[in-house]
Length: 179
Image (cartoon, rainbow, N blue to C red):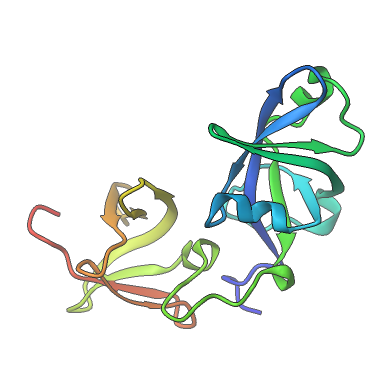
């Protein structure tokens, strides 16, 4: 298993209480967002910091119930029965073993596998390292940390991202005018 293929994958984060019966709001990193509910057991631990946790840093919890609302996903976890208990889980990461993830589709990659990849221009010039990614609605964005410490945002679109090679840990890009 490569460094990019950590044993645990972050699939979301617990946001805070919802209502008075212990429900918790969820930020899903899955696509579509409700796919997070396909996992029967979640492992809860610190929020994603780019490093995969160990099993001893996580606590397995069972989902008792879930609902998808217009404003997001809420869940009821075993042992969480009131807003005060739900508040204790706020900010915690939701993790699953990599072995439970479906295979990525052709020409698709898990974000976790791209974090830490070296980003190079098509002529081979290094730009930096992928620090994290985020979704904007229109497209995903690579956040690249430059060697000098600066940050560069690159849209994850075909015109910019030419090749992702998670085996070699490189992402080849073509910078558009103004980038």
